[in-house]
Every structure is written in C-alpha cells, then in structure tokens.
Length: 443
Image (cartoon, rainbow, N blue to C red; front, side):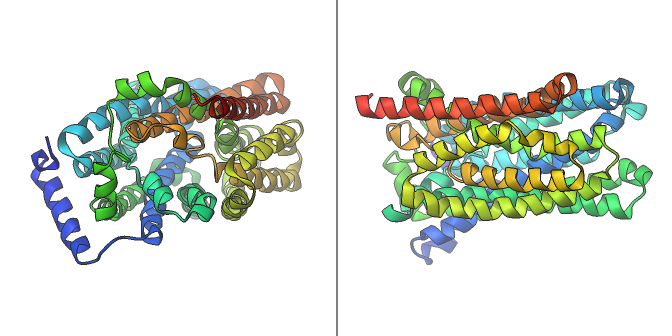
C-alpha cells in the first residue's frame, strides 16, 4: 500500500511539501544537512531535558521516599526504559512505513515524541498521585523511546550518499552536531530557571517549561524533515532500495552479525556520552555542595568544546579514515578512564578539566560513531539494518550507563566508573577489529 493510504493530515503535509520541492529542483547536500541538524538537535534536546530532570527533579518529585541516592537510581532505571523500547519502536514504525509511507511514519513518530515529552510537563508528583506518578513517568518514557525508534528517517544516509567522496568524514559528522547543540540549549534553560527561581518554585513548576520548549522544537523539526523526505533525491533512493524499509526479520536474518558489530563499534563514544553529561551532574548534585546551576554552566562550556571537536573529527576522518579516528579515540577514552573520573572530586579546577578533556574526546569519537559499518550492509537491508544498529548501540552503550556508573562509583569510588568507561572502549576496539576481519574475508 502506498503513502496515499495514510491519514488525510499526513497526506496533505506531504503533498504541500512535494509542491514546494517540485519547483525547487534537486535538494543538495547542504540543504539535507540543515534538515538533519534540525532533526537531530530536536531529538537530543528532548534527551537532555529529560536527562537533566532525571537528576534534579524526578528523585524529589516522583521518588521522595527512596532518599536522594535511591531516588536518583530509580530515576535512572526509568531513564533506561526509552532505550529498551527503542528497537520495538523501530520495528513498529518500519511496518507503518512499509504500509502507509515515510511521511506518515515520520509524522506519527514525531507527534508521539512530542506528546510523550509534553506529557511529562504535566506529571503529578508522588504527593499528589502516589505510585501512579512513577507509573505515568515510565509510560511517558516508553512513549519517547518508541517514538525515537520511529524518528529514524534515513536523512543521515541520504546525506552520506550525496556527499562528495573526499568529504565523507565531514558529512558523516554533521548529524552528530545535534548532540552538543541540544545539550547547550538544555543546560542553558535549566541553569536559567535554577538561577532565577527559588528551589520550591523550580521543583513546583519551573522545571516543566523546558518540556514545553521541546514540544515546540519537535514541531519545527517535523516540517524541516518532511520537506526533505519528499524530495526527488530521497524518493529516487527509496525506489532504488537505498532507503527502502526492509522487514525487520529479514534484516536481522541476513545482516545479524554485521548489526551486532555495528552496535558495539560506538560503545566507547556512547559510554563516554553519559560520563560527561548525566553521570557527573548526578555525582556533583549528590556528593558535593556545588550548586547544580553552576555545574550546568560548566557542562555548557564543555559542550562548546565538544561541538568544535565534532567538527574537527570530520576533517581528521577525511584525512586519516573514519575507522582510524574511531580506533585512536577509543584508545584515548581508555586512557582517560584510568584517571579522569577522580577529577570530579578535585574542586572547580578538576571538574572543568574533566569536562573539557572529556568533551573533546567525546566530540572526536562521537563525530564519526554513527554508521561506522553501514556501508557493509546490502542495499536491500541498509535502511532497516542501520536503524536497528543505532538502536542497539544506544541500548548497550548508553541505556544503563548513568545507572551503572552511579551505582559502581557509590560503592567502589569514582575509579569504578572509569572501569565502566574502559569496558566501552574495549568493546569499540574489538568491534572495529572484527569488522576489519569481516571486510578482508569478504563476509
């Protein structure tokens, strides 16, 4: 069944976008890049708004009976639900894509993401709703995860396919810019509300505003991405199966080992991702007297360095190769894990050194972490296999990272959090070696 079977509103959105592009001509790589950056920024802004609230708000609002540490651990457990739900969302929305079309799938997924996000803004606390507060939070988080699985639109693949051969590394890093941009905006918003509001007002209503902003950004992202999805270039690649949504079972059966390797290739980046964002905020908030607003500013400064490092990763990858950049940065993350986490107990100077050095390493590795083995997938399965690879990479590399790092560091010290990071670096190096071996054997 074609996209004509979709809902009237979705069809009209696609039709209007198609009319605009009919006279515009072929959309080039730079225009695709803008759509990709807007889309990824909206997703990561959602991610960081929830992540920051999971440290500063939910332990007190939803889990006050568990104490500061216990409440944070429970909050991180709920945080992980989105990563568990994400592969199921991919399977569901690929089925929608195959039956109703890419526009319907993307519209439905982003509306679900926006609805689940804005619903959190109306979340009642434990004092008002009892255990239902946690149940509702978990349901909204699962909705976010399902929607993120469906929000995979293939634009990053389209961008890579339209990139000049000698600039593949540069264009590969463009989607990753959404992470530091999203963190900068989310950190700034929360820091502002923490600064201008009393603690009681922030916990009562101030924390809810960033979730409304996230919904508004999702609406903008929806139109930006729909505009690209209906372009002739995208539709041509869809018809030639470059971006065709193959059935999930088929992709797993035919690409299973490569999907597994692809999921483990970015483990170092994704483990590092939480070690410089969610985890340090929880450690500072729980075990120091530093104001969270001040540390959010430090995170913001670190994210700026991370943004510059993501840009640098594109130039380095074009000169030395993506796998080389991933391998070298994984080794750097392994070295970082041996000493850097202890800097969080080193006062303001130690915290700043940890965050800046960590974000530089993260930017260099994360900038090339997406789709490192995507080219090894067959054309028929590339779209679905790439989506599943991304889902599993986030699940294994990031889903339980804040929970595991906080639990380990609480019982065994910050050095244990470094050991967790080291395991991610080892996973990346092993996956890159296996992928190289498969390529040499022609498997």
